[in-house]
Image 1 (cartoon, helix red, strand yellow):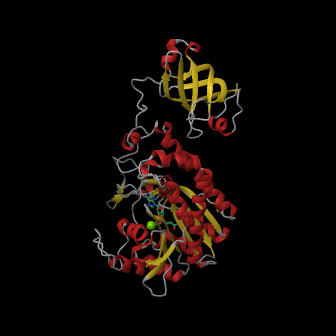
Image 2: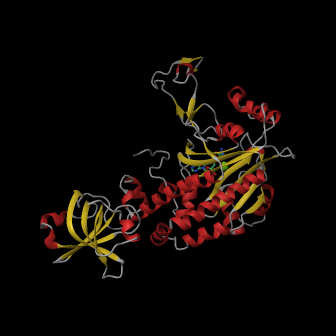
Length: 463
Ligand code: 4AD
Ligand code: MG
């Protein structure tokens, strides 16, 4: 008999008819005559309770049906007599697909710490919490494409291996096939002429520069792919490999860029509320300190985001009376403690900070008339801090070139980028949304390592 997913049975059960389900055993409780086996197949947060007449299976087989065992069960779906679930299954036939030794299976019924579950990331998909998280991750990835495709944006694939440094931060992973123990040298430096690409390359920190090229022909594009940062940040908000969504739009100035970013975030939050309800409810109930998850998402989805000049933000922080670890002065970068003060204490709403000093932002941002600030925008979220970073781009050839020189960037490496400012240059803008930071907000989890299947952080590349 064809397998039915447990979610579909709950969604539309035909009572008193026979189904076949497959899944992994969560628990078994046995009395003398009957056993109750709860199984889950990952299709949703609900477990199906299966009532097994102990006479149906050999005693030896019954004993093997322990937590983690994979089974295929056929039986009648009936209204449950218990109040915990609306329906249950009366088993007619049970087949063990894969045993899980009760002594050594690491995922027992008890609650495990997230740290421990990260060490067994290959098995954590089977827990209720991680099942919900990764179903939500999938749904939101789909919603991102839906949002942009509905608006006529084109999905652009940008290279993962690149010779360009987009953010100019220098935190990049080198890509090389040179033999590390006998690197060919020239004038005291590695001879990258002999390397695979004939020049130094690394994993991309952002698809933006390539997206800008495409926007100068396709008008509105977006990327959605993995990006890499070799910064040694061991925080609950940083990954060495994370996924970023980067729209880039010709003919957009900063304000239109901000509006798109706000629309995108609100759309994704509404999408989660409407399409991931059961999983959100599960996380609200089972993750500690998460009681107001759905309410928090709703509030932000309906809030007017605050727009705030960087200079004003600095004033607010200075007048806050708070003794910050990082002192506040015009020109300093906003640290997470500053961001969280603005969002959580001062405004109690998402905040969009604009017009940052040029010194603390990347070379490609458009210089303002004051000559000191650039048309940057960062969106700060409660509990997260920076979730989006973006800007209007410098489309004026001379100004861009001057900035490249000021920062000592290798002009020759950017010839193709500069070309777009020579030929048919137009005002344009874009931003980057950190996918995992968004998922932190939507799931209410507190560590970014728990919203990506296999986190890469300093010292960790297992699985
Ligand atoms: O602010 P960032 O560095 O901006 C860029 O990369 C631009 N090229 C984006 C653009 O304008 N197209 O990164 C954008 C976002 C951040 O706001 C944050 O949400 C996320 O990416 N992010 C990280 N997420 C997880 N781990 C890290 N190490 C991250 N670094 C940035
Ligand atoms: Mg940033």
